[in-house]
Length: 486
Image (cartoon, rainbow, N blue to C red; front, side, top):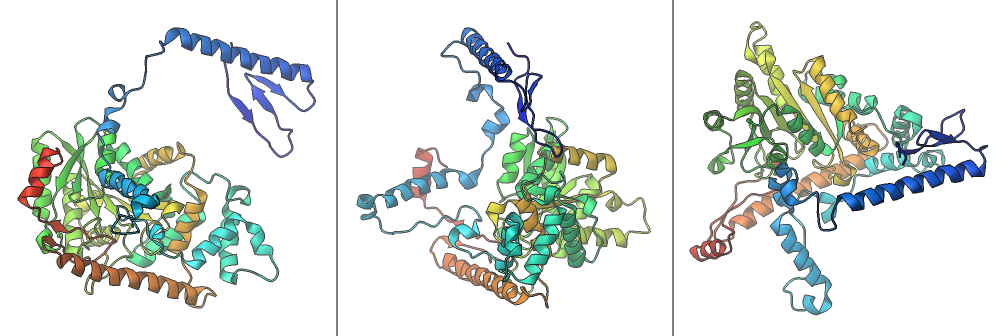
């Protein structure tokens, strides 16, 4: 048989394309007999492998089953695509059948199980799509007369020049294009008033990939766990379970707008410790998904101080930072709050806050863009030394690089048109319309839910969701119990 079965075709400037099989290379000048010989080797090897497989495995035997798989994956649950989505698919199928649809009390199904703005007809922002179009098809930049505003052409050209081979079809550096990471660092500095280092920023295929990567790397033993708010975005509990960790919940207080009491955080930590769980990290989602809260600065400071004292890495999910609707509420980043605390204790070099570790996540899928399908995201890492950053870089390299177009969307999100730019007026008009629409719907949805008997919903101060409390009747609870759904 053939010891090596890889087949590669590698064109290179100045060299002929070489097709290699099992150490034998065939160039354009090799004769047909050599090619036939190698092809026969491949067929022979495949036949031998098939014969071996038939002898070693009985027809009824299966090597990969639910009983013989990674049980962390089997036990993980991802509720946003669970039973409700299955039921929705059934309803959609009935609506698609004219005979059944005729008897349905409604004619349209709106999917609200995940934040997917464009799926419910949110319009894309023109500047972002124009830059993306020019980056993926640079010939658009050479048309005369021009089809894009000058600032679109400038930005697209900047990105194209930064790409290997000047092509969006190329892999980038594993941590992402430097020009985009510099733009993100500039955005963070403008937002927080503190410096940001592009070398501490990694671009990822959506914020979800960054979260999973960090959860995977943080677990050292089977006793390790992560503190997560409840309610939460189920990515966290799902990923923690998949990677063999323990989920330990802390509970925001619903009656005070889903506020986080540091005493509740301490209770959860102490209980986990008593249960022999080594808490390694605490997740904070701000603005809150799914409860719509916006944390005040003093709460963020309390969490950071607690985490630093206990040696916990803070995972700050801040993908809804542009979605704050209520007058008097303001988004404060964990990065800004951490730097403020460190500045206040600058005369105390031994203070735990100077050893704090923070990973902040952001995404192009939420905010005002809603570009979920572009899969753009990034994380900023604070408090990690060169050796640990090398480990994060290795994890990124294992996936080669995040998708290039997602990186571009991160760049334009971080550095949109400014006053005086050719695209600014249209950008400002489109962005304002999207934001005001979300703000209006947040008020309307809160009021509508609170008008329904048996429902109570806290104000939606931020993010994109409502999380109402539903009082179930005794009959409903009994029916659920009979169906093992309680």
